[in-house]
Image (cartoon, rainbow, N blue to C red; front, side):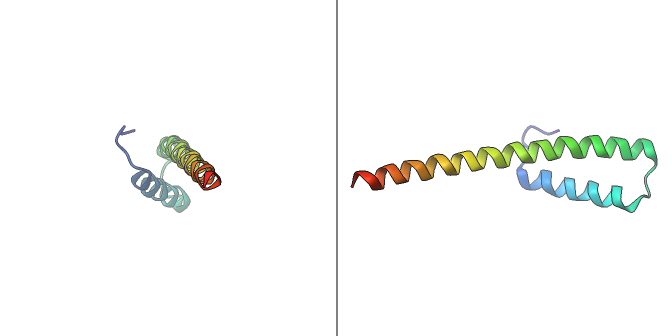
Length: 70
């Protein structure tokens, strides 16, 4: 997987993979490779979302502390 991949590009690729797998037109070996790629992309997206959520919590907590000091 590309180290510079963005969340949006990973999600787009993941959607493409899901469509290909749902079509049922790919042979088993290719479907397994797509599934593995999809699993890695899903993990990447989850980590990105978790990091964003943590950052939002941190910023929110900092703002609440700042507001409480006024």
